[in-house]
Image (cartoon, rainbow, N blue to C red; front, side, top):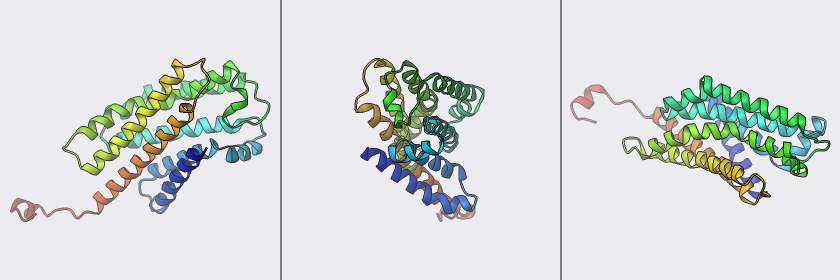
Length: 244
């Protein structure tokens, strides 16, 4: 529970820090990515979940909303990260026909499995219904899209971080995001391998740790790009004559 609050606080702080820039029309995609990530983290905390779900009828629609928020966050995050790190192939896989097909299938799967599940009373993370096969399948399908985006980005981020031609601060942010994406992939693989096993601490720790690492990497990337734009452009003549 403490980790959830920490990640929520960090992502909410990052979103607030980017609000002035977003109002000026600068890099709004990153701002909305942080807003959605913070909202998703809030909905994973029982206090916020119960409050929102009560407004939606108390039948766990807040959990379905959480899934849609995460899907939207990863779509924006994937597109922005692919563009920032010049991962053009990853960008096409995320924002192209294949990526939107993956998103559509994930959305359809979670809606169908949610409807098929018996969820009469509000329960954060659907903990009270973990004995239902449809709820277990719902949880696995809910991970499909973010795992797909992570699989598209993780290799490209790693290669960018390993390339010494790039600036060290941007390479570091790429490395963090690659690590975070890799944690999502590991979490999904473990969940599938241990389908019938009662989830342990790793079930909650891995995804929240991944979100925290990715958010820090995204914040560092945004800051590096902002500082780069503020640097005065060198005078071409000064460069030619070795004055810079």
